Length: 312
Ligand code: 8YV
Image 1 (cartoon, rainbow, N blue to C red):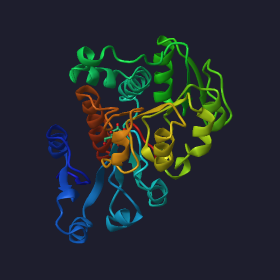
Image 2: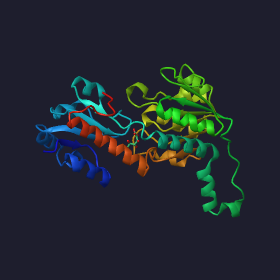
Image 3: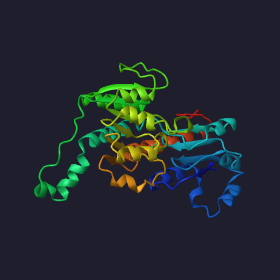
Image 4: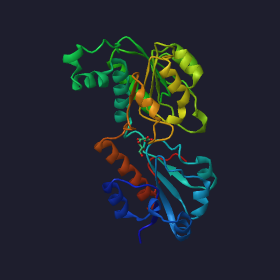
């Protein structure tokens, strides 16, 4: 008998096939009536496969009283109520490390594209403006600038290594100091003040909600750039939009937004923002490794073994 697992969201076929091959999967996202679906699953559902964006709260946990494990696809677990899971003795796992390099690549791509304006330079060529109007205007150099990393965990460290290779100076703020050779700033405002580019890598969730608002952006100043590859919730999005429109900061590179996949259309009008559609970990290799880890955690748990990457 395969263990019963509720799946919160629609997945690429290869991942759903991997889940189906080992577990009796019940697709919550296909349920016509959520309450009826949960009532039917309540006596047997022992696992939940969750995905960024699908809220896993106390109400859902209480609707599935036999739930033992929530296995999340993604390193970020901000859509899961971790306290509620802890209180109910439910294990929560995520997919760290396997995505560090890809997410760090995305962060550096945003840094480079935001300062050098490569997407706009390419659009200039494609629109025939190189011939019609001449060369694309000069942009801003990356080398020699200071990159401030807000949240120096494993992804932040991978970004730091890349930034060094680009000739940038690296500094950081983190709740606790790290054993790395970068200067430490005691708070996000000081980090922003000391940086040309502030890259946000800290986890989402209530503790970091709107951490980067007017005060941090003021500290960054009109020559400063902000890059966010973490969670949209960490930036005060309406304030950021206003600062970009009024050129109170020089530019932004964003991979994440407050209400994905909806991005306020006013962002599309900006000439000082580079916008990616949350593609930080979106490569075949990395997403495969993330899926394998999500499945492996479920498999280990149902085999009575310790899971590989436990959060709670
Ligand atoms: C993915 C992410 O976009 O790992 C995370 O926390 O945000 C990304 O890697 C996401 O997990 C897709 O569901």
